[in-house]
Image (cartoon, rainbow, N blue to C red; front, side, top):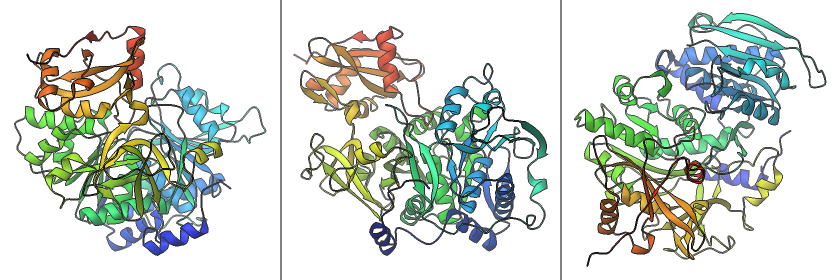
Length: 573
């Protein structure tokens, strides 16, 4: 059994509020497959599946895992590029009561993957040959014997229709020399075109409150923690977003974020809640995101601000006045520059300004009916079933008044059920009143909408003065020649920290740092917050989910890999 935060009283409250329902993710998949068996449900760059084909593939996979010896509660890990198989494995876990761990990113080394597989005591592992940052020198297959709990490993082919290699590990945890056998099987449409799967498939697990999802945080600081969710804590988010943004079976959702990231999971939640078509994009396959959005006839796109900036730049280069049939664009993962939101509005796309975490999903978002000022400047209000309040950043048990900056706290049916195997981290993430403390700083405006100020750990303290990087970045993005901006601290013996502004400039542009400082002055940045270092970079280091890795910028500066230029703002005479 997995230790969780399940509480009978809170469970009753979540059902009574309508946040939780009796459906599992697999149960919703079944409903859509029976109602619209021949409608397109799931696509990647190489494969298109109908609802009935998805259901058949999931049940076939569930049967194979059951026959391999997996039991309810066993952990199943996915290390794949974004493709339909990731969704199929997740749904098979929901069906049989396994716990799916999809958050293994391509940027990880094989050694890091083995460490995580051992940490979760993984029983089944799904990957593909040649995947990972060091696959050429350290193939994952050579290390699998180090995972004593492993029963089955599946190496998918290049596409869904290609041959699959399966390794049945005969070892148990107490054996030291596992014997492996290779079964060269096939996957794809040929195996799911027939009738019901062979006898032996166990009854579907119909408990929506079981742990079904274990995701390692992909944050920009510290050791990743294993976040646990149930079908209900995930679907509560998807149902509300679908309701509030009026998505239905005619919507086509294009997921730009990797399915190893929680934004990818939120796309799956909405896929099931609405019965819409889910279109998966894999940047590594080489097709530009804008091309895939237009070709797939997407109406709703999900990604991070980095994706949005790149696509808008592509729209500008092509002199387009629209993004195909897209009417809404979800952005989360980091604060959204105001200029990015305004650019979308100018081409007829309503930005969905979203805030959340792996721990509580996309719980805070703007609505399509919100005024432009709300959409471009805030993350709107909390979804039904979740509450948000602002607490003193230094005294988290004390709530602050409206209009004051503090740490964002939340509670409700979208919240995780604890950190895997980490009681201390679980306890330390809540204040005394049971509010989950996010580590993010925010403030409510007069309409009750949330504005993100930044991470507590991102805060730059210059001589005792608090400087919020997100404010400087937002204002910098309004400069016409700036594509992206990131603000990070540089250590200073006298003041503690000074502000460094790093940017990516538009192709063909040459930006003078004094011009940028003048721009910041003109758009309202206080002279006390002005950058004192400046650098133009060719690219930013990114997390697997597309967030700028500020800690790496700090380390690159310390090592001398990058050398920011000292700058000084001089007020006009």
